Length: 205
Image 1 (cartoon, one colour):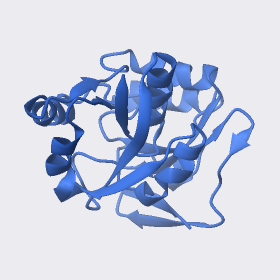
Image 2: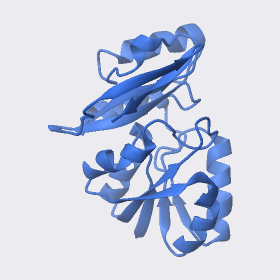
Image 3: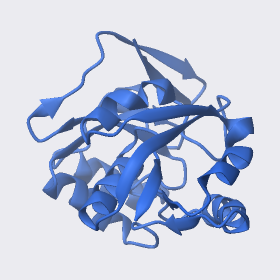
């Protein structure tokens, strides 16, 4: 099926696009939404660099501002939209409402999966993602830039037990950026930290 992928550069949209390709979806391109800094809907840190993560899957990217997103869906009639939604009813409902109005099929392969299973799937597929934003109790500046791997997973589990965070960050506790797939990597030349009160993010250059 001809499709486009809602692609932020984060682990969930990357994994969903990868699964869609395996399931026979023909992804013509990825859509990256450029949101406001504290968007309730879309991934903010390094969205403009999503093309580098997408290159690991051979996907080209189109950039759209958040306020243009709903109108843009009208141009996708008879296509499928691949999303990385896991547990956010707010995000999924808003996207589906506008897609169905425009005859756009929504495919969300990670929807309602156990969140630890999602992380394990990343590790099994050698998808390399780093933490680029944190905004929940228990996270510190030291978490920024950490790779989500077998060494880091126990820390996420510990934060889940202590503070109730979602292990996959689906509650907005953290955001990620995919920088590698197996032996292929796309790493920023420079990065700097923005930290305010109890949360912050990394910006790539």
